[in-house]
Length: 195
Image 1: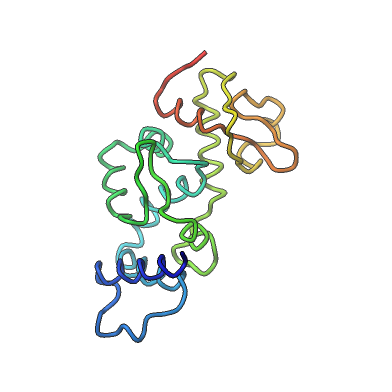
Image 2: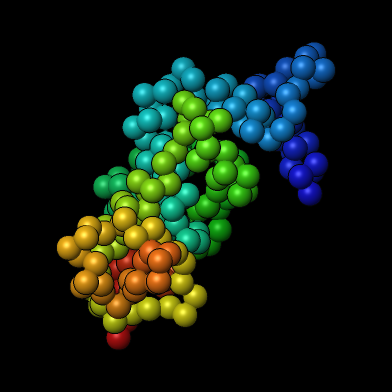
């Protein structure tokens, strides 16, 4: 599987001009190096835009326990739909679309983005976790909702003083942090309030 993903990234690099066909003998080994080449090709000349627009979206995608709904993303980042869609287009095949929302196309990209190897494209997942947790906390209309299929969010998503009053869609898990339900994310994005 890793070989197919590697070949796919070479194909994507050739397709978008990041890798030249007459220099195929100079293709680096490893997915991280291919990600770096592609991100450099796409974003080096637009680092301010990457830092201000794409990085916030990538932070939430890294932190989300499942597909990240468009409405939730727009609300959490205080973006309108047009701005969101422009940023989504910029990230192209690095994101995967589903009816439920977006996510990174592969876990290897998440690992690379959150590693020092990706600098200057490094994305701090903890910032995204905190932002997502704080947003969901502040918009909770029905604190009794919780899904049986929950995902983990680092405990630092809420301050020390707030940990004693965790709403129903967040619950403390022993030594691993807070649990945010996927249902809470979907419901918050849709603006619904289920009993």
